[in-house]
Image (tube, rainbow over all chains, first blue to last red; front, side):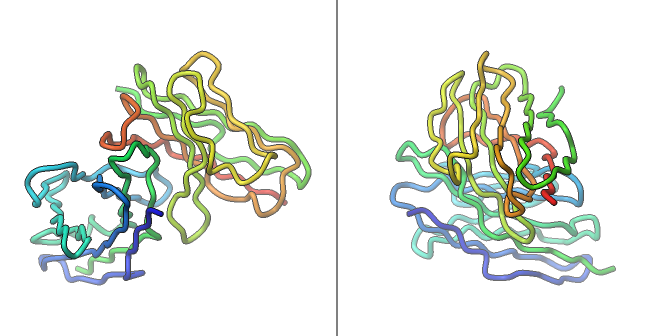
Length: 114
Length: 115
């Protein structure tokens, strides 16, 4: 069965510092990996995805994520955090075996302090 | 362009009542998905459509839940005999085609409260 784990309920970081939000996954086939962000009272917004190719994926708002097959991880990163990055972040996976639904992690709340 | 829209944004209903939640996908998107997000959790898959047909309804929790997409565009999620445990935010998403490699575009959700 497919699953996603986000081991941290909350990540706190000072503005200007680098940030990492962790995600590990389990799928039966090749993974398709996604990051979404959710601001209060707004829908989920797509940030970036890994399908194939380069393990480092760049997305919206300066975010990037690194796919590590051996560690089954897809951590979200940003070199310099902004207060406006404070939100709820979700990692999700589908697989190449024909399953189109997204399986989401429980989410990680990112708090960036001035 | 216009994104995914969902109506109503909020719905309060009494236990045992019937509710309908509507989703209007991005124009031209053939794949449509429904998810449910309970407080403090990530979205959970309910059902998805390719065109008019339900390709996978394995996430529907029981037979009180039903969804249709009669013309391949707008979809309605129907819940009969609502229970307090049905309270959640119901999210709709669409993508250009069916395929696990396509990102899904989400609507703002309908917050359902069953009293």
